[in-house]
Length: 129
Picture 1 (tube, rainbow, N blue to C red):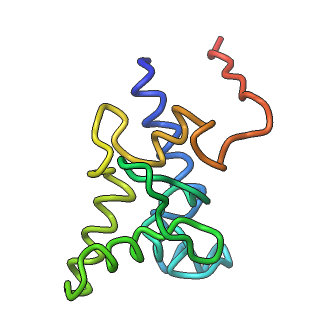
Picture 2 (picture 1 turned 45 degrees about the vertical axis):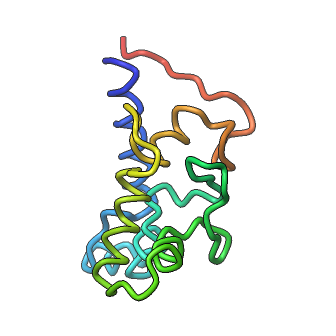
């Protein structure tokens, strides 16, 4: 498995755990709020702090980066659908960051020192036997 594949798998696992892909029925079965915080803010990793490509902090709502608030401020007057699309592009697809990693969630996995999702000690990855 390549580093990029590992980062992709880890970031998708984080998004899954944070409820980014949860349906209303799944949320009800799990006893969690729907839509989830990750869905509301288009923040699949529930990142607490993140900067754009120019080093500016994204807006924070209830302690988490809010890509919807970013899109609403960046594209005033845009429709709800357009704001949602732009927020998802920025938060999940990482349109503003580009590169092989793509999304802020994937970049946080690859470079945990850049965000507050970093563990207090380096994680260990044990290859399967």
